[in-house]
Image (cartoon, rainbow over all chains, first blue to last red; front, side, top):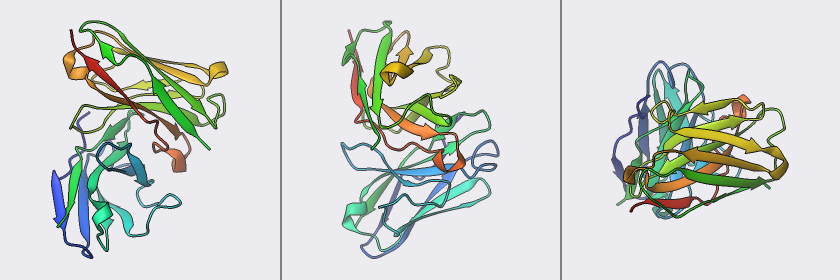
Length: 110
Length: 122
């Protein structure tokens, strides 16, 4: 299974909204809503910010939202803040009962 | 509160077998629906999913590493052990274990252990 495809980098100014795409196949994102997103600051452990495609865990800011269309999932960060500068990874369950992560996106706040 | 912690060698020689232990608390791997997974991250690179073990002892492995991986659980000790054979310098990475589940709202990795850096070098 190949890694899900994410843009290497996305940037935005404080207060703006940005969207990170995550492209998969009809063996993962296309047939399941089991897409999760993780935020990782440098030197830190990945943190779950979205699960089941659109759900936010308790304590995660509502500035983070997830969506899906076809074989592409997306993470939108609205009202961009300096603390949002981090790496972001998508992850999907697959038809083989396994998981696959995305290639990762570095978010820069200008 | 669920916590997980990885332990094992920090340095492994090429061709050797790596054995990592994930010790957890706050849940039981004998409870229906509970899963523990392993994920790794080479320095400066992305996350790679490795393996899962289910409450019922089912197992899943990354297709690209399946021939080298083995995962077992010791429910009495609240531990999961991952072994990877024939280690190569390209296997140098931080290895994480994480809690997961079979129910639809639990098909995610949360929380994660702190990770353990394994370097493969002679």
